Image (cartoon, rainbow, N blue to C red; front, top):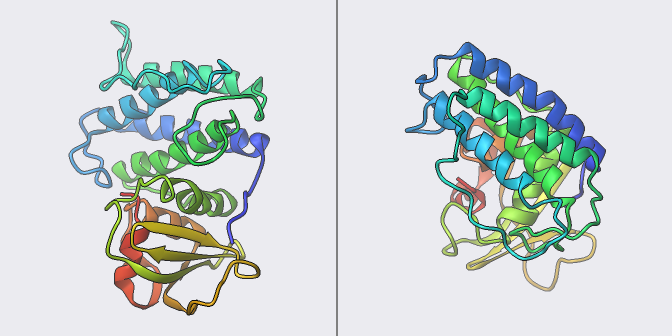
Length: 254
């Protein structure tokens, strides 16, 4: 089943680790360095993308409003004279200041099926930063794994937030059956029932019904590799996979 791996403090702690690691990788790479895990992007593109998200979230997450904010500018509006990394740093500092004083139960818009609460955003930004830190490090020939506890919660976020919101790589579709994911280093497993247009994250103790619930596909690996595979950063072949491997495509967000 899915379970949150932490609280607001946990996700802010992850941001305080992943943010400086992202900045260090960006500082080491020329701006036009290709980001191999994001085809068509450079390090400069990646930095502006993450900075733009930070500035956008800061514009509404603490407002107490649950109505949708204006769309995020793409590309973001950068003040003259600022480098992309300086713009990122501004957004990162603003984000941490906002989150430090944020009541997770306060009203705040989000795009997910969860309640419209501010606690959505520290979690979302921790995972956005962790995956893009991996992208930035890969651009300089590194790419350290995402910490196991954070990565396990990132897997849960894909399964309980992205997919139920219709944000899979291929919306809707042709996949039917149960998929089991298991982390080898975070002592956690997940069962998903794919039903064409729908997806359900299952608690095997209470939710399995009269349908055949035996997993048609199983994938196991470190929590980091599971998360990176769901985000299209590494192939599912990186994992130990058995059964109908085609079902795994129904879990991809990218």
